[in-house]
Length: 218
Image (cartoon, rainbow, N blue to C red):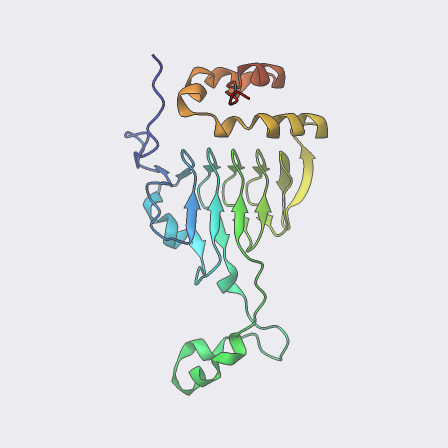
């Protein structure tokens, strides 16, 4: 019987320590990651929380779905990076201590776009940057070096600085079908049986492979 990959193993490829599964790695209650999402970095991938999630002073969350692939250097800039822009200087004097800290009220009420949310099955290319409060849809592809400043639609491909929608991977009708089948929510055992369909099959194939839902008798 086919056996699913273990989502609790930190290094799913023991010979490649540069690859880590994020769910067993992250400890912050402000970061939520779904099973099998991974980060790849030759320079200590285990430091993801401190090196790749920046200015995370709370309380907003970073939420990443299942089966996401994060290339080397992906950065999430959280709301703590914001500075005042309505006066002559943007420098955050109160954070530097001394008597300047008496003016901390000047840092309250800064723009806050809320949680940063990434859907399922999203591929992030090398060196991408995601700004605070952005929502990235299921099945999206973020091109290498992109700076994502606004929301990305389901199955959208974006690139550039600021990132622009290049195209969508499927038609609106087919995207609706893919969202309805939501293969990433299938039981791991069922996914294991249909890996080839998920990776290379048609939408018709994927719908045919979807697990049947047992409905309660009336």
